[in-house]
Length: 251
Image (cartoon, rainbow, N blue to C red; front, side):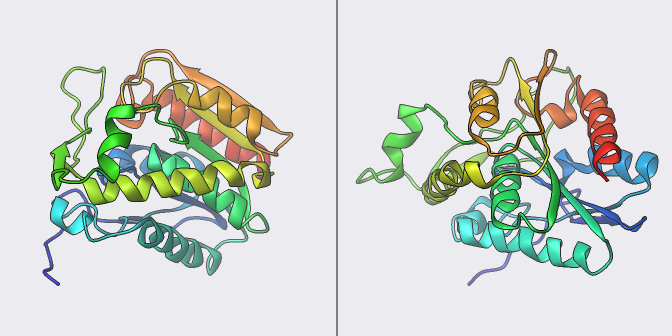
Protein backbone atom coordinates (compact mmCIF):
# COMPACT_ATOMS: atom_id res chain seq x y z
CA UNK A 1 0.00 0.00 0.00
CA UNK A 2 1.33 3.41 -0.95
CA UNK A 3 2.36 5.71 1.89
CA UNK A 4 1.92 9.48 1.90
CA UNK A 5 3.80 12.12 3.88
CA UNK A 6 1.98 13.98 6.62
CA UNK A 7 1.12 17.54 5.66
CA UNK A 8 2.68 20.44 7.55
CA UNK A 9 0.51 21.42 10.56
CA UNK A 10 -1.30 18.06 10.43
CA UNK A 11 0.97 16.32 12.93
CA UNK A 12 -0.52 15.00 16.17
CA UNK A 13 0.11 17.09 19.28
CA UNK A 14 0.79 16.25 22.91
CA UNK A 15 1.17 18.62 25.85
CA UNK A 16 2.36 17.13 29.13
CA UNK A 17 0.56 18.58 32.14
CA UNK A 18 -1.21 17.49 35.31
CA UNK A 19 -3.14 14.28 35.97
CA UNK A 20 -6.27 15.56 34.22
CA UNK A 21 -6.16 14.40 30.61
CA UNK A 22 -8.05 15.79 27.62
CA UNK A 23 -8.36 13.86 24.36
CA UNK A 24 -9.12 16.09 21.35
CA UNK A 25 -10.31 14.77 17.98
CA UNK A 26 -10.41 16.57 14.65
CA UNK A 27 -13.10 15.88 12.09
CA UNK A 28 -13.86 14.18 8.78
CA UNK A 29 -11.27 15.08 6.09
CA UNK A 30 -9.75 17.57 8.56
CA UNK A 31 -6.55 17.65 10.60
CA UNK A 32 -5.20 18.46 14.04
CA UNK A 33 -4.68 22.04 12.82
CA UNK A 34 -8.37 22.72 13.48
CA UNK A 35 -8.01 21.64 17.13
CA UNK A 36 -4.58 22.97 18.06
CA UNK A 37 -5.83 26.31 19.42
CA UNK A 38 -8.24 24.53 21.76
CA UNK A 39 -5.55 22.06 22.79
CA UNK A 40 -3.02 24.78 23.52
CA UNK A 41 -5.51 26.82 25.54
CA UNK A 42 -6.55 23.86 27.69
CA UNK A 43 -2.93 22.90 28.28
CA UNK A 44 -1.78 26.44 29.05
CA UNK A 45 -4.75 27.79 31.02
CA UNK A 46 -5.80 24.56 32.72
CA UNK A 47 -2.48 22.80 33.05
CA UNK A 48 -4.07 19.65 31.64
CA UNK A 49 -2.32 16.87 29.78
CA UNK A 50 -3.69 17.19 26.24
CA UNK A 51 -3.41 14.85 23.28
CA UNK A 52 -4.62 15.45 19.72
CA UNK A 53 -4.15 12.36 17.55
CA UNK A 54 -4.14 12.36 13.76
CA UNK A 55 -6.92 10.03 12.62
CA UNK A 56 -5.73 7.35 10.24
CA UNK A 57 -5.92 8.40 6.59
CA UNK A 58 -6.14 12.08 7.49
CA UNK A 59 -3.60 14.83 7.04
CA UNK A 60 -1.88 13.15 4.11
CA UNK A 61 -3.73 12.59 0.82
CA UNK A 62 -7.41 11.90 -0.02
CA UNK A 63 -6.32 8.59 -1.58
CA UNK A 64 -4.97 7.61 1.83
CA UNK A 65 -8.29 8.41 3.48
CA UNK A 66 -10.11 6.31 0.87
CA UNK A 67 -8.32 3.26 2.30
CA UNK A 68 -9.21 4.00 5.94
CA UNK A 69 -12.33 2.94 7.80
CA UNK A 70 -14.46 4.06 10.72
CA UNK A 71 -12.82 1.31 12.75
CA UNK A 72 -9.42 2.79 11.91
CA UNK A 73 -10.55 6.19 13.16
CA UNK A 74 -11.88 4.67 16.37
CA UNK A 75 -8.59 2.83 16.93
CA UNK A 76 -6.68 6.11 16.46
CA UNK A 77 -8.74 7.62 19.28
CA UNK A 78 -8.48 4.55 21.50
CA UNK A 79 -4.69 4.54 21.18
CA UNK A 80 -4.63 8.16 22.32
CA UNK A 81 -6.91 7.26 25.21
CA UNK A 82 -4.46 4.60 26.36
CA UNK A 83 -1.66 7.17 26.27
CA UNK A 84 -3.68 9.44 28.56
CA UNK A 85 -4.70 6.63 30.90
CA UNK A 86 -1.05 5.81 31.49
CA UNK A 87 -0.45 9.37 32.72
CA UNK A 88 -3.74 10.69 34.06
CA UNK A 89 -6.26 9.75 36.74
CA UNK A 90 -9.11 11.61 35.04
CA UNK A 91 -9.89 11.80 31.32
CA UNK A 92 -12.18 14.11 29.32
CA UNK A 93 -12.83 14.00 25.58
CA UNK A 94 -13.82 16.58 22.98
CA UNK A 95 -13.96 16.77 19.22
CA UNK A 96 -15.26 18.68 16.22
CA UNK A 97 -17.73 17.34 13.65
CA UNK A 98 -16.89 13.65 13.17
CA UNK A 99 -14.56 14.22 16.09
CA UNK A 100 -17.70 15.05 18.05
CA UNK A 101 -19.25 11.82 16.81
CA UNK A 102 -16.18 9.97 18.03
CA UNK A 103 -16.43 11.86 21.33
CA UNK A 104 -19.94 10.52 21.88
CA UNK A 105 -18.97 7.03 20.69
CA UNK A 106 -16.06 6.90 23.13
CA UNK A 107 -18.12 8.28 26.01
CA UNK A 108 -20.63 5.47 25.44
CA UNK A 109 -18.13 2.66 24.89
CA UNK A 110 -15.73 3.72 27.65
CA UNK A 111 -18.19 5.05 30.20
CA UNK A 112 -16.03 3.75 33.03
CA UNK A 113 -13.11 5.92 31.89
CA UNK A 114 -14.49 9.11 30.31
CA UNK A 115 -15.30 11.68 33.00
CA UNK A 116 -16.93 14.19 30.68
CA UNK A 117 -17.65 14.75 26.98
CA UNK A 118 -17.62 17.96 24.91
CA UNK A 119 -18.94 17.37 21.36
CA UNK A 120 -18.61 20.37 19.03
CA UNK A 121 -20.93 20.44 16.00
CA UNK A 122 -21.09 16.66 16.24
CA UNK A 123 -22.51 14.69 13.33
CA UNK A 124 -25.25 12.19 14.10
CA UNK A 125 -27.64 12.93 11.23
CA UNK A 126 -26.62 14.75 8.04
CA UNK A 127 -30.05 15.05 6.41
CA UNK A 128 -28.28 15.15 3.03
CA UNK A 129 -29.95 13.09 0.30
CA UNK A 130 -27.25 14.21 -2.14
CA UNK A 131 -24.51 12.72 0.01
CA UNK A 132 -26.49 9.60 0.89
CA UNK A 133 -27.28 8.74 -2.71
CA UNK A 134 -23.61 8.50 -3.74
CA UNK A 135 -22.57 6.22 -0.88
CA UNK A 136 -23.50 3.00 -2.70
CA UNK A 137 -24.49 4.34 -6.11
CA UNK A 138 -23.27 2.29 -9.05
CA UNK A 139 -20.80 4.31 -11.07
CA UNK A 140 -20.26 6.91 -8.36
CA UNK A 141 -17.03 8.92 -8.68
CA UNK A 142 -14.13 8.07 -6.41
CA UNK A 143 -13.97 11.63 -5.12
CA UNK A 144 -16.35 14.51 -4.46
CA UNK A 145 -15.55 18.17 -3.73
CA UNK A 146 -14.24 18.79 -0.22
CA UNK A 147 -16.31 20.08 2.70
CA UNK A 148 -13.57 21.90 4.64
CA UNK A 149 -13.20 25.52 5.76
CA UNK A 150 -16.83 26.31 6.56
CA UNK A 151 -15.68 29.32 8.59
CA UNK A 152 -17.34 32.71 9.08
CA UNK A 153 -14.25 34.62 10.22
CA UNK A 154 -12.43 36.23 7.26
CA UNK A 155 -8.90 34.96 6.73
CA UNK A 156 -9.29 31.82 8.85
CA UNK A 157 -8.68 28.65 6.82
CA UNK A 158 -8.98 25.01 7.81
CA UNK A 159 -6.32 22.55 6.69
CA UNK A 160 -8.55 19.89 5.14
CA UNK A 161 -8.70 17.75 2.03
CA UNK A 162 -9.93 19.50 -1.13
CA UNK A 163 -11.62 16.22 -2.10
CA UNK A 164 -13.81 13.78 -0.19
CA UNK A 165 -13.43 10.05 -0.93
CA UNK A 166 -16.78 8.37 -1.57
CA UNK A 167 -15.54 5.27 0.27
CA UNK A 168 -15.07 7.43 3.36
CA UNK A 169 -18.64 8.70 3.09
CA UNK A 170 -19.82 5.12 3.55
CA UNK A 171 -17.69 4.88 6.66
CA UNK A 172 -18.96 8.03 8.31
CA UNK A 173 -22.54 6.91 7.75
CA UNK A 174 -21.69 3.68 9.55
CA UNK A 175 -20.06 5.56 12.43
CA UNK A 176 -23.00 7.93 12.77
CA UNK A 177 -25.48 5.05 12.75
CA UNK A 178 -23.68 3.15 15.50
CA UNK A 179 -23.19 6.29 17.59
CA UNK A 180 -26.86 7.22 17.18
CA UNK A 181 -27.88 3.96 18.83
CA UNK A 182 -25.26 4.36 21.57
CA UNK A 183 -26.45 7.79 22.69
CA UNK A 184 -28.43 6.44 25.69
CA UNK A 185 -25.16 5.04 27.03
CA UNK A 186 -23.53 8.46 27.13
CA UNK A 187 -24.05 9.04 30.85
CA UNK A 188 -21.12 11.26 31.77
CA UNK A 189 -21.54 15.05 32.13
CA UNK A 190 -21.79 16.47 28.62
CA UNK A 191 -21.33 19.99 27.23
CA UNK A 192 -22.68 20.25 23.68
CA UNK A 193 -21.60 23.08 21.39
CA UNK A 194 -23.67 23.73 18.27
CA UNK A 195 -23.32 26.49 15.70
CA UNK A 196 -26.61 28.12 14.74
CA UNK A 197 -25.26 28.57 11.21
CA UNK A 198 -23.57 25.37 10.07
CA UNK A 199 -23.34 24.43 6.40
CA UNK A 200 -21.92 20.94 6.99
CA UNK A 201 -23.73 19.44 10.00
CA UNK A 202 -27.37 20.52 10.39
CA UNK A 203 -27.85 22.54 13.61
CA UNK A 204 -30.72 20.28 14.84
CA UNK A 205 -28.01 17.74 15.71
CA UNK A 206 -27.30 19.69 18.89
CA UNK A 207 -30.81 19.46 20.39
CA UNK A 208 -31.08 15.85 19.15
CA UNK A 209 -27.96 14.86 21.04
CA UNK A 210 -29.15 16.73 24.13
CA UNK A 211 -32.46 14.87 24.07
CA UNK A 212 -31.14 11.38 23.40
CA UNK A 213 -28.00 11.00 25.50
CA UNK A 214 -28.44 9.25 28.83
CA UNK A 215 -26.64 11.90 30.88
CA UNK A 216 -28.55 13.91 33.46
CA UNK A 217 -25.84 16.56 33.72
CA UNK A 218 -26.00 17.96 30.19
CA UNK A 219 -26.07 21.36 28.53
CA UNK A 220 -26.41 22.72 25.01
CA UNK A 221 -24.54 25.94 24.26
CA UNK A 222 -25.40 27.61 20.96
CA UNK A 223 -22.60 29.29 19.03
CA UNK A 224 -23.96 32.52 17.59
CA UNK A 225 -21.04 33.72 15.47
CA UNK A 226 -19.41 30.68 13.87
CA UNK A 227 -20.01 28.25 11.05
CA UNK A 228 -19.06 24.56 11.15
CA UNK A 229 -15.35 24.77 11.98
CA UNK A 230 -16.09 26.69 15.15
CA UNK A 231 -12.73 25.87 16.73
CA UNK A 232 -11.09 28.16 14.16
CA UNK A 233 -13.92 30.68 13.99
CA UNK A 234 -15.21 33.68 15.94
CA UNK A 235 -16.35 31.57 18.89
CA UNK A 236 -13.08 29.68 19.42
CA UNK A 237 -12.28 31.57 22.64
CA UNK A 238 -15.78 30.92 23.98
CA UNK A 239 -15.37 27.21 23.25
CA UNK A 240 -11.99 27.12 24.97
CA UNK A 241 -13.15 29.06 28.04
CA UNK A 242 -16.39 27.13 28.50
CA UNK A 243 -14.56 23.80 27.99
CA UNK A 244 -11.97 24.81 30.58
CA UNK A 245 -14.70 25.71 33.07
CA UNK A 246 -16.57 22.46 32.37
CA UNK A 247 -13.47 20.32 32.93
CA UNK A 248 -12.53 22.17 36.12
CA UNK A 249 -16.05 21.84 37.51
CA UNK A 250 -16.20 18.09 36.83
CA UNK A 251 -12.66 17.06 37.78
